[in-house]
Length: 183
Image (tube, rainbow, N blue to C red):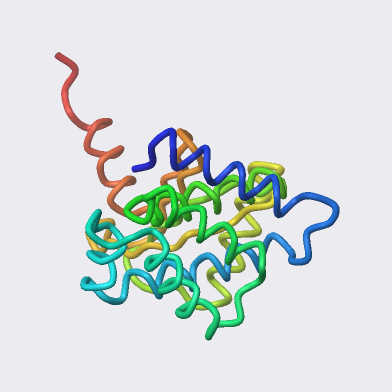
């Protein structure tokens, strides 16, 4: 779940990443922000320190600076993280990342598709599903795979509010509705 402030920070970062003078690609920016989020979420103690009002902003910034310096993150991402720390938004960083990924996909013209299957799909199956979805939607897609054994077999693809249900469970439910008496 995202909030308006997270979206605001994500849009600001996307503006900077898509600026003509940005020194990294949008994909690199997403990857580096993921690394930063993982670094900052690894330790509950670190998370507490970064959110504590008892620790000065200067100490927090220095601590984050040392952590991310080791990762070799781009200057733009480092500066963005410093703003997040300075404005005490570390607790929102996961939501900011999610909003940033969405903003990048929108700007790249990619439709985010949640694809749910009963079991892990092979690479060939994934490719076939992705090609079918691109043909059905007329858009390039960013697939997000999930597993849910309850669907028994097949796949369910969700793009925004539109759902393509090719699952065995969906077919059984449709059949049940067709066979049930009309009240």
